[in-house]
Image (cartoon, rainbow, N blue to C red; front, side, top):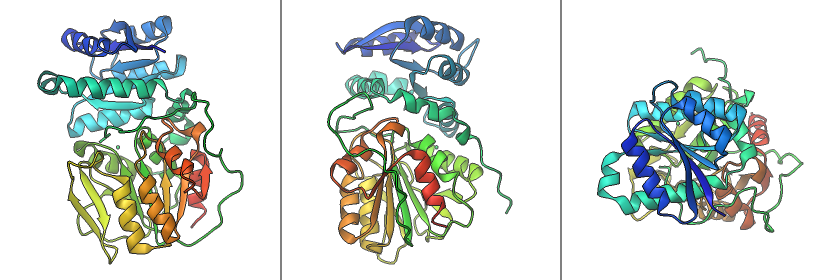
Length: 369
């Protein structure tokens, strides 16, 4: 089935290049272009594309305002383009809050220097988002994502495996559990995610009380320029503390450490955080498997690992190591995922002790305190 795409950007050059790149894929059809947010809304309503590529800074109406309006009137998977800067990270996170499903760096040099790599990445992402669970897009603008009360005292990496969405009705893993998990005491909660993860993490973590009894490690596929801004945003919204992890950090109850983009986060034998250079041989930097595996060695059966929405299967092998050590594994259910890849891989491998909706994951974690 051909994927219909609407390309939105105020730069004629960029519109043409994106159209040319997508046009090279026989399973993608660019059905229209728009030069500003208002035009994007109008063409979305008339053309009904499967995916929209969206710039942020445009005349008449900016991209974030357009995304917000599109999600109200005609929910559609939106892929934002952003710069690899701190401000670009903030804009991308705002766009995800508004309803965008994913983002890619907008780098004109890469388009000129590495056209084949750019073509592969962009087309892959468009195909994945075309299979997005449209019902889950509503999560991005749900009331539960409103900022939590202020306290007093946001790479994506390429997937090497196909993703599967709610529209793929093949025999699959178990549906969401109805019974709550058995309560246990954990020395660590580790959460891994990718596409759809920034919003999912925000939804889960804002439900946790400041008195949350365990330390948390967060592994989100995200570029290096983005993780600091994402950690700062979560810290402002959550009652727990959130910071970008640094080498030598110690684990503390009620403190979540976010793996830096482009690097790997591990625990040593004493449970001290180690931040290592990203290995080019690994597809993901940071990698959920790497962090989960080190947690299994450090804490054996005292870890609760949670795998949320995302492309591919990162986290499955780390979950296997944790399971063999006696730790607990939760996976997000299909219905609440933006991309049902990573949690599906864990569930299909029979590693999940519980398969829960995103709402229930936050609620059950909060009940650990």
